Image (cartoon, rainbow, N blue to C red):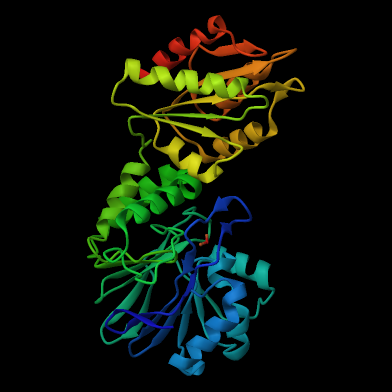
Length: 396
Ligand code: FEO
């Protein structure tokens, strides 16, 4: 179904209400998502991106309601990942010679995925242009590592639309399509979750790219993302937010994350939580059990925290696999400028805290000295260091 974006530019993507996970199970999708594709009809007709492979047939059928596919002069593929390129095989079977504008890296990924080296690729670099007629152009901007080496954006002069692909997107299904029409709390939460769980490792590049795009001095009326809402009302607000998020972002929050076998580590988690506001009354405190809370939502809370505490009981000379798996993901996300503390219970050998310390240090956290370590069920005496842990996390 087509939706008007501006003048001769229409949205022709897929609102994917059923989607519940993304990148395998690496990213939970709680509110659905969309794969946004766009059709530009100036003197030249241009398709910008497509949809995920399972929706390819529906996408092509809908597109045929709009135009004769043979009228498409150019295809722009901003990113080769299959959620945006998945309809290319069906499309190219119908219009095989149509030029595909993309980066050199995108050619590698498209050929690797679809095995069609004969497609008519036209590789572009930052600053290259494509004439649309009617005095309008597309200007290409490479977005290397935001979030793949092949990522690119395209800016449309005249209508001042930035087709940003994954950057500035959210996994958030809304029929309303524009940022001024949807629930702002949901939108900002989903935008932050997307940044924290996908883009945060590339924050230094985000900062550089924003500086580069701002220096181009291009007026931007619309940021047309490839997932979620399109930024139409004050579109630069999401650019400004990305600049903040990329700069070792934190709020006044402490988050406590744990898993527990027989409740002892849970008791310590809540003991620490109860002391935080004694030392810092305005600090937000959040406590999450990894076994019953979405890992990506917890990661979003870590993203906005200035300190965390992580707890696990000792099990088979190590920590629970739920906690070690989560810590591996934490390391990938490269959070900066955050403190951490450790806690846990044990019955026999008791190496859990040591392992937590090592893994948090590897993940780039400044691990504070105080810790809570309790044998079997924590006694009042064993819980006493909870106050020192809370003080270390709450201050500074
Ligand atoms: Fe939305 Fe990197 O694909």
